[in-house]
Image (tube, rainbow, N blue to C red; front, side, top):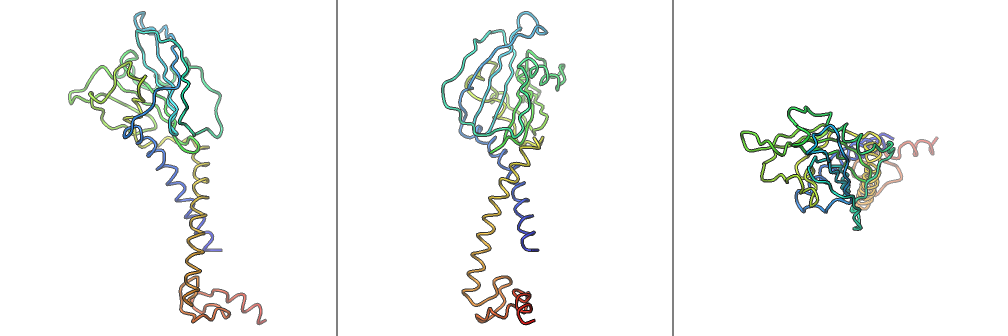
Length: 260
């Protein structure tokens, strides 16, 4: 029983580590191999922005366990379109919340940042969810694409992610969102959990590690018995298994029960 509990705890610990490590690996892929265009593009009108910048383009990405809604204020009005290419996105939400309208999501994401530091008409905002097989981490990111700092990096801030300094040449301009996922090319290390997805992923990976640990244990026991040793502690039994092991007590309870 003690050994089984140890394997269960070990499997859960490894599952939790995998649930955190895999989203980081997913976010690393766009920086290494590039990304596909957004699956859809929509435009909303924000009357709070001045008349010259009354439009907000919303790019919707689904790629390799990453879901991103990216908001960029612009002078241009982009027509709605739907891509016909296959989505490379296999993640899902365990308990999906009612989907916000784009207007609500836009207001919520920009209210999380200081408007004097991240002016609406100068910044790119993203709502990002990541994880596999369930979405397990969420964060929002703002990048000021118009006002470089003294060290030639762009000011960025995130809630739910750690964000490294962003070099200005690496950051795409206002309308380059049609070619890539700019926010995911910069963010790393998500830490704001979606608890239902995190628990599901932990159990999912724990079951995988449980099977692997059980296979390893069965192989180790079989190898020791072929060598004439105790399968539990490897004590030399000289192929006399019927009496159990005097070192660790393996099968001693069965032997004592039969003798009594």
